[in-house]
Length: 370
Image 1 (tube, rainbow, N blue to C red):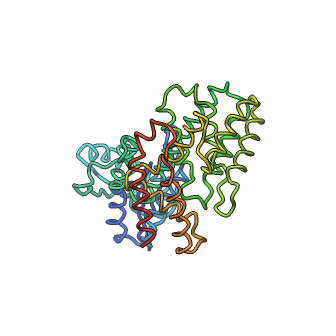
Image 2 (image 1 turned 90 degrees about the vertical axis):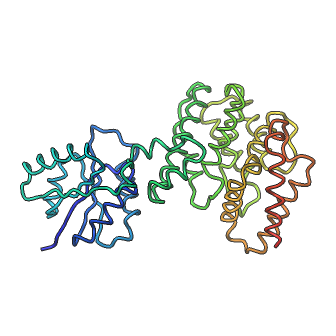
Image 3 (image 1 turned 180 degrees about the horizontal axis):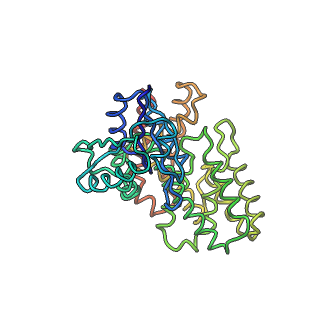
């Protein structure tokens, strides 16, 4: 008879503490089933499908570990139904032991032939919990590195995606509220989210939009920047590296969305001018267009790490171009910015980013021309 065990939890999300328990117990059984538990009375950060997907990615290297979902059912009953003889439970501290002892007794009353095995956490993992990990998300600029020490890499990606999507939702809700909550706004939001989630995008993603909106928000009352916010949402709605009229096509989508929401014509025309200005073919003359353009170029003046990540992502978007050709074209583009008397059009962004942006681009050109 196969020795089967189950290891159940909310895994919202799965952490390195959970993974450690799985790695240590998997060799003891023919099959270890990791059960993602669902309690309809609880609120979760991730859906059961998302939690199961993250768990599956995290244990993909363990051949005898599988993932299952248990919704609104005693885990011990699920264990019995799949022929498992053991329920694995991780213990972090003495308080856990007290609670787990009561749970084990309850499980024994329900299914007397399914035993509970407690696995103590390693000392350096005792502090870990899913709640703690979620508390770190977005807490400070270095949160990703901190979280990466606590969860598997696929989970870091999902946490970041959720964090960005939640921020995007907040920005969109704020903009729509200022515009009178027009009917159909949710459909427009979903369309934009789909566009910015296209698989060929590496830099021109929802993260880029949220970063621009975050910085726009710092400039003051958003009610005075509604057209700018709308333009930011739409300026990369079309992103195809193989065509040259991305901004023009993005503008058409912006106008179509504005019509669907019944926004005033002047609103759409102002936003149109801002979107087309992000083509960066000429320095903008309009003061509000200058803000949008400078926000779009802010990445050039960020830290070495952020700028290098940006350059790597741009390269991925143009991976159909040979490396030598890309290096030549990219050097030419960066040099064209350096040839301007000023990269940024507003004094605020010049004082904040100009010097660093020039150093970043000069360094990048030097690397591209080696």
